[in-house]
Amino acid sequence: MPKHFSGTPEQERALSAYVKLLRASESIHQEAMRPLLSENLTASQFAVLEALFHVGPMCLTDLARKILKTSGNITMVVGNLEKRGLVVREQNPEDRRYFNVAITPEGRKLIGRVFPTHLDKIVELMERLDHQEQEALARICLRLGKV
Image (cartoon, rainbow, N blue to C red):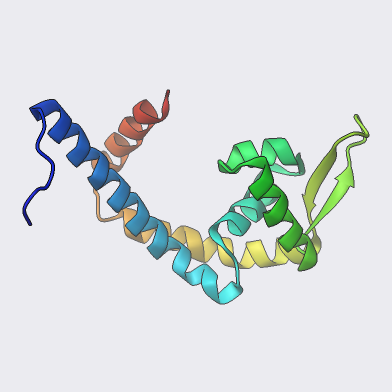
């Protein structure tokens, strides 16, 4: 496939690496999330349930920060999970101006059922890389993620 951008070698190298990183990330993410579709869970809904399951109740701001979403988006995601009875909002006992989001027993049951399958899929996808490559990728991603 011919390249369409012509720039300095540094620009072409950076753009090529960036595009490959995004394509790989999106491809892996789509494959990992596919099984969750049968549970009618979006990636954001799964992320909220997983965070609450493993970390415990959180305020909306912390939850949004944890799953890398905006406060407006997290409000909608939590609202949809609340309608399904998977989470509840509880007034923060330490500061009544804030609400914590907590997973319900039904939410625990769902995430307890789907998380192991999701984790197995991630392990399967990442086994395209050997152990050293996975560790190197993790180190590189940490460096890229530090802004």
